[in-house]
Amino acid sequence: MNDFAKKLNQAMTEREVSQKELAAAVGVGKSSVSQYLSGRSVPRSDVQAKIAEFLDCTVDWLNSTVPADDRSEKGLKNISVEKCAKLLGKSEQFVRVALQTGAAPFGFAVKNKTVYSYHISPKKLKEYIGTLTA
Image (cartoon, rainbow, N blue to C red):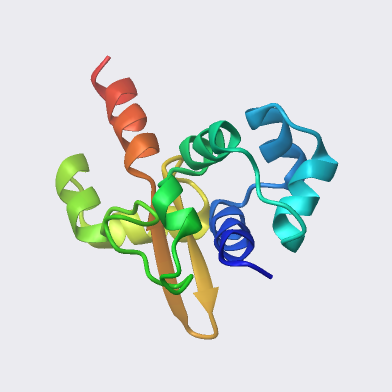
């Protein structure tokens, strides 16, 4: 499996996106997405740009040799629970519980044994805050 396939798998898993959803969003067939995920093929640059946009990451991160678990500013975009709480004017615990229960439309929590990992999309959080002020 190539680096693109590994990163695509990770991003889709963390964003809870199915092959069918990704295919529809970027305008390719589900079989093409399957080929990308298996590492049998790599999408054209224009399709990579659409994938990165939909998965809220960068094309450079998808193609880099940086380990798949590196979520630096240049990779998978993610806002900290602390920053999210400040932007919403809520406590960090409020944000964590909302993410854990699936009540937050801007992110999610993944439980690994007894520890949670929180994923907050900057794009979705901005959209959510916009609906609060409208």
